[in-house]
Figure 1 (cartoon, rainbow over the protein chains, first blue to last red):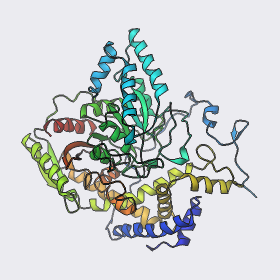
Figure 2 (cartoon, each protein chain N blue to C red):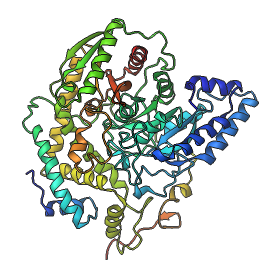
Figure 3 (spheres, chains in turn red, yellow):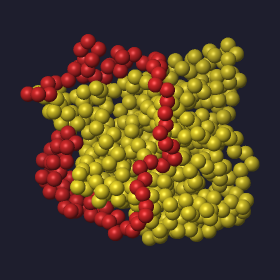
Figure 4 (cartoon, each protein chain N blue to C red):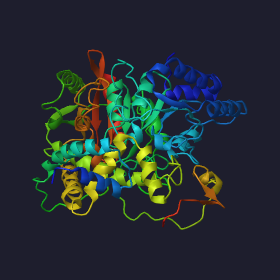
Length: 97
Length: 473
């Protein structure tokens, strides 16, 4: 499975909520097939006895006290960039049509 | 006009010999004079002038203005900062004013440093040339037909052009080290977790690091010393080594065991770059270091591992740009669904889209184990090889990139070719180890950087080694 079709790309774009132009769909199908072929070199690597690494900090379960802290940022500051707000909330378009 | 060493500038401001307001004007003047290189997205002139005046006033009142008093700097535009928009060089964040600042910037400001501008990058730090910036491509200060490297290309060019004494960058797979090499400056990528990532636009969270670009090791080390250490806003920050990085005097190469990475010296390496590395190796030997050839046989796999792990994390991190809370929002959508699709489709540039699609693919059910889990497991193999080799040597050495700076447009049409340029920087990122790049000669006038690496957490030792190396190069 190293050949992505137009339909594969469209399905992925849909999963990622990403509208693509027809041109991008064509281009990505070809390019990403190349990239996936490049990844094939990993399939034959022997990893017997090895666990996957998700992070390299050496830290585990970093906890902090669950306390309210004032960082000097107001709700208005945080809402400032939102395209639509109402009564101190972010307003979005209807979900169910 | 050239900048003094950072410690001297700060001492001059603290003693009243230099004025912060003049230093800020010097930086802003240089930025205007060198505008044709397009290293800068926006200045933070108004806020910088206010801060400078306040620092000068504090000095007059007999207050201690800090270890970086009045020192101007430039932040890569993926750092949240006051005084200008934070765009990460992306259209989707155009117009975004950060409600808080990155911890790195807060710590520098607490010591009196002054952010004067935001530097260009590949949008969301996806790239190695700044050609993926949604705005413009920065030009290499040594040859304007060539790229400055990336993604911290604006930061590296800014330091090479002496727009400010130092600049901030982020390095996920080479984004500080490779542009430092291409622009002929010092670039420091710390151990993963040494500097807080809070307030820096996330790319690939398991390898994202924050570091400095400067003209000398001393300058970079002082900046790193101010930024390093635990931060409650970033749970992945580590306990730093207690010794200060600010004083590296007495650093020596005598008896240091350094491994030359065989896999980075093989075919595909530009002969001119190879010569620069070999000349540096000879100088280190003459200064008393012990250099031996070492092999990490899985390193050639690191690029495939990185270009699975990185887009997977990118696709996840970029899901927050949904057109609802901040950033670009498509105005004519009828439904929430359409608003997501169109805001993201129109707001993201091509490389961000490419990585979202790859990342979504390798994380999707049916392919997750074959790609993502396999890549993470090969990552373990690579890390184990670093651990093993560090039993025999204290440090590692190699080139930074296979070639000097390439021409603008040369690799732009072929994403895979562009990814191959990262071959010598991604493995240290996957392993979380620190790396520093130092100018080590040139090929026909184009700078070449030598890359030095240390085990995780040995940042001070690496900076000492770099200081001693800088003295003999």
